[in-house]
Image (cartoon, rainbow, N blue to C red):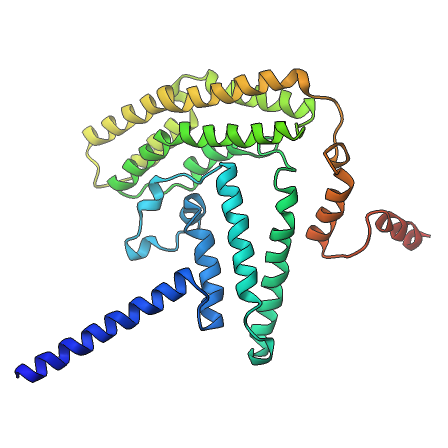
Length: 308
């Protein structure tokens, strides 16, 4: 029996060591298996973007929920980290020999290669956009995300909701850092965009906290959580409304103040041609969005020939 237990222990230790080596190689190095590499790429993306992970709802069934109390990073440092990761991933992808891949793997590799290459080539243009504009941006996507995507099925989800509201000041400070990085590069939205977002944000914070969508949607959905007592619902609702007043609204006000300061610097020009190296950026955007290698001027000329 003693020898049997020793042998069993040795096997268990060997299994643990093998699992540790496998996980270390999978996470920090290039996986031996190409299919695992595809999955590693996917995992790298979703596990560094908590809001995306919440929207996908893939891991809650396994009891993994802590990401539901976090917000995605909006900072330039995080943006650069993602690009550097794409560079590393592209280098590792090219280490897998196409000759050893199945037809299905070759197709997946070519698609992934095209996508990641575009991300890496986009490093030069990473600030050539407007994170806050009249159609989308943190200022309107965050309330929509909280009202429609953040799940409220249990008491813990209510705690996570509050954690995310408490995280708004940090998220908006990261966003402001990102906006200032663009301003330093002479990348500012057109005047009409700034005017629209100023109105949108001013309207958002003009309502009492009780009438804000962050409070009203929480109240409506928390009422459906069967295991919450009336006292707990009342307490959570009060905390949500306090967070809106003390954390969310001041964060929006900082963003409003920034855009008020930027407004006099804006112009009525629009289009990417007004951005630094705008013509080169347009050529990159054309390739990224259409896969064509045509030059920008060739596209309308082709259209004219086809119409004729």
